[in-house]
Image (cartoon, rainbow, N blue to C red; front, side):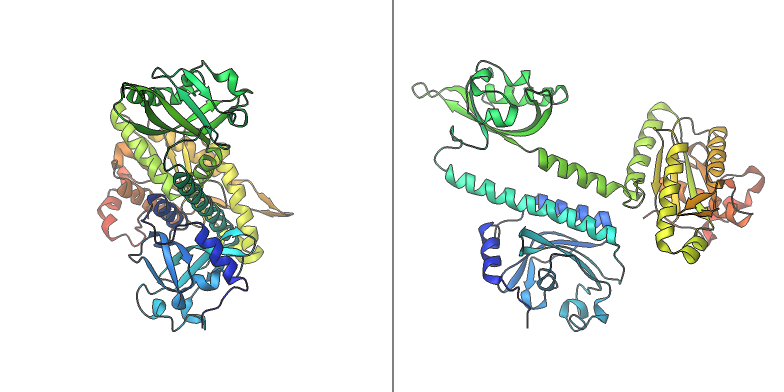
Length: 480
């Protein structure tokens, strides 16, 4: 028997008011799923909307289904609570052990679902992440999943609002008396002839003060070229409708992100283009959500350092820069010494606190142009930009070892750790990301094997056999 919320009729009414069930796929919901999957390193992420008898996937990543019956839906259980529902191993949960999605494809083992909260107690569905292997989900990851779910709800509300607006404006695209968007009537050269009262709310100006001005007088310099091209296309009648996103300067000097929708207008007598109408809306909240999502996808939640995604991006950027300038850079793989002992004796909370202290020390040592990323429990990597010479990498490694050698106070417990470092140089080991990382990783384990709290280079002229044995190195690993 499928569990039902106590307010199921009201919940279904709220869901149906969004007018999204049965509509064509929309790429931005799939993009949110891809971002969630990358954020948690999971193969499957879904935006699931729970209808009366079925669940529909408004967005999906890693699963080739449009939905399932509600009877087998994990999300039917997740919408019963405002909290994130986590199933670490579905084969050990009586509710799901015989579920066909567990016993058959996609062989769900791990599930985490955050409800899509339309109003207190009204949950349209979930943003859920799925794995085919059992796993755990931390408190911080639960909070992050809820953050992403809020972005999904904002997109659902935006979809509903835009669809309702299009229906209201079926006979005329824009309405001058719109109370939320600033509506502007302009000549082909951009001179404003009419501005709606919403200008006061959006930009802080009385509408009359903007009549006779041009939009480029208010557009952020970084957005001006693209905005100018858009207006040129409208003015030359190359397009009849266009949408652009820009930053406008408000009267108080601050900037607001807007989305402007332009439609060409025509002279009633000659039928020739005589100007355009623009509807301008504030999208600052949406932009901030997108920027937050981009940050979450590229940074480690515990330490604030970059993660593997950021490491790969920065590596590729440095490779392109070095190839243009015939330069190089260094990769330093770091592994903390005696970190496991801290976890075992003081607990995981102390271990997390220690990692945050380590992150602060790493940031204090590297330059602003360098990149530091956490790629594992107590594993870090540094991209040292610039020349990529041995002497530069040596100095950095020595500073890192010195910084990590100082005791760290964990709530009155002075803790001593160390760090072992493996170094690979593009000048010596090439620019292939995975090969360079493996080379630095092998050097790291040589440093550990030869005494810890030390550094080793991947290429050692007096140890040529190291390169020869690389293919059989049991510690050889690959960046995921």
